[in-house]
Length: 149
Image 1: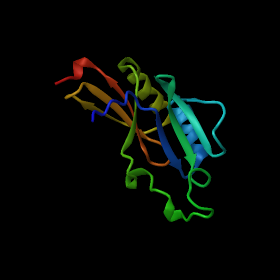
Image 2 (image 1 turned 45 degrees about the horizontal axis):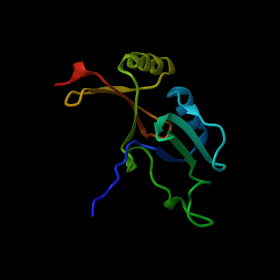
Image 3 (image 1 turned 90 degrees about the vertical axis):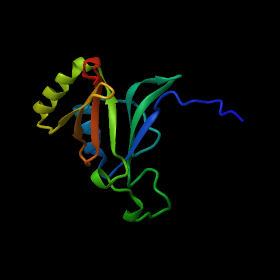
Image 4 (image 1 turned 180 degrees about the horizontal axis):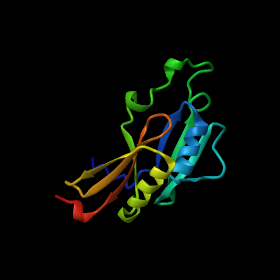
């Protein structure tokens, strides 16, 4: 039997948050994602990343761990995954044009947000890495043909 399907784009990234308000502020104001109006339920906030594929907007969803997606009526803290360096999530990468990367670094400097820059010559990418309020790594990455090895 042939598979007969091929995923075409990333539809959603979801993060379970320890403290929702600072995470909303970071992704809306530091990163610049557009918050979508309306929510599926209390404790879940959606941000638009891009148009996406076939009508499905690519989104970042922030879930308040105390309200959304928790099993059982009184789940324990042990039921919640770690964030930051102990998380199984390595990082989130969001794409933008390479001519906007200098603006990213100036903006991060203005905010006092620490970051590092890494070049991936094998594929021609440059990433600017920072951390959200819960320690998850966020990369703003761009392609630049001149960076290819």
